[in-house]
Amino acid sequence: MLLAEVEGTTILFLAGLVLTCGVLLLRTHRQLGSRAKTSLPAPASFSQPKTPPPTGHRLDAPTDVRRWEVEMHDVARDLQAQLDSKIAIVQQLIAAAAQQSDRLEVLLERAADLQAVPTQREGSPLNDDSSHHLRVDGVVTKAGSSASRRHAEIYSLADAGLSSAAIASRVGSPIGEVELILGLRKNEGAAG
Image (cartoon, rainbow, N blue to C red; front, side, top):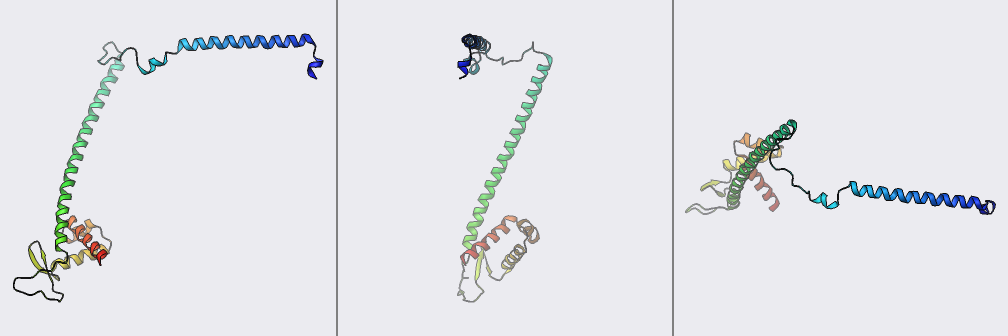
């Protein structure tokens, strides 16, 4: 409908205008494409520089760049020293932890040997009453002796909510021993 009302010269004029715009756009696109190719370096140059960067000091560099280089060198040296000292401390802590672990294993083996192993004095029969004897570090003690009283004290302090460190300072025993005694209590509770 619209084309029927428009005259033939108007149609030719519009067709020429569209064709001219298309040609101009095509030429502009080609020119911009060729400029972009010449201004951007080749993709291979991004991955590998053509000349290696200078590795030594550049004496012809501005003073600010030389000062910055010296400061960065000093910072790197200080950081390396700090890292080396931290590594040495960590190695010492690992060695101390290994020693404590070995000590704890020995104590656990002793505790396993001590758990409910009634012994008999030479020449005396083992009684069935509550006065069983336990061997603690080579010394035969009665079950109701001071060791049992100390264990009971440690248990009551733990029940009161004190930490192992607080219990150890109150009782006068090493923290490891207090933790071992509390651990044995847990094992006895699980077994019983």
